[in-house]
Length: 401
Image (cartoon, rainbow, N blue to C red; front, side):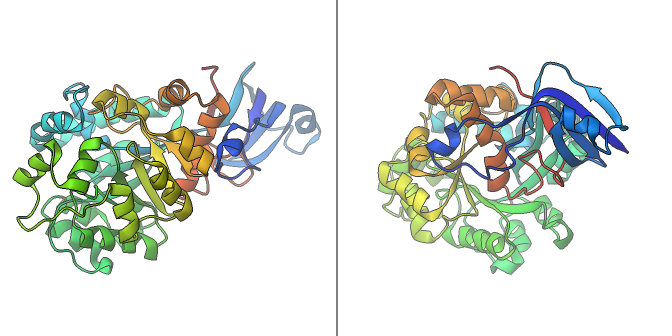
């Protein structure tokens, strides 16, 4: 059945593609005044002016006039941990990464009844849907099936099943066994099957918490199947101190709880180390990138690596602020994510966009591109991020921030 939606204007982003570079991010938005979006079976059929619509073959279909509003592509949350949603308000913020992690570890280790988590996920994802978000890049390990169940009919999910720890991995074609062998995420291993490859991917937790072999196996699995690969990168100064010098608060915590006795720090910062291992590239989504030097930014840009900024999470934990303006100037593709309710007050992408404006001075048009067409590119979502014929009909009322 054909449906049509009329608005004061429609921002399609359809002719632009992903915005790399500050000029592309800050370019004026092309708006179709008095626009109409014609939809059939959840797909966009056409985008045209109201005057053209009145003369077209679609003019007899049901028309909903939304009034004096602007429509834009629905938002995409490129990085989140939905399975931590029951920990809202429970962790310690403001004291730095290791202090936050110490508050998180015992909470995350506690068993949570599936029905309790599912109820929480239903409520959280309903809020996500109402906030204008159509898709979430979700990193998890223990409860992907519950996340998928709760997300049904609310939003799309790219499930990044997370590799963690220093167990010896199997070859990349056996990545489910890689996950299971570490004893950390057997449910994720069972969840990953060939019929789900088009909406699952693998994430490496970080360069300090996963063996190089496991990271490379995960990266290879994603590369071979043309899926995005995600990794937390350069999130805190404590991470950099651990990898560069093998000391500091995070190192001491990891030495007691996770690192094998023969672990040796690589003597490199995380971004350079990721580059040396071959983990950077156009299908890699590097999350946070707070502690990135000019050399690190040049490396990310040269490799074509995508970066997901999580400004409110970084602010909550107290890890600093990513050099996003310099990344944009160098042509690094930037998108946005909320991270989890264990390090953020909500999962509202509009508030993340507002934070990007406040912290870095990006314009409305820049943050809109980050949260739509850029995120779609980073997560390989060719059907989202723009309003155009053949694409999924996913749009929201673009607010005046």
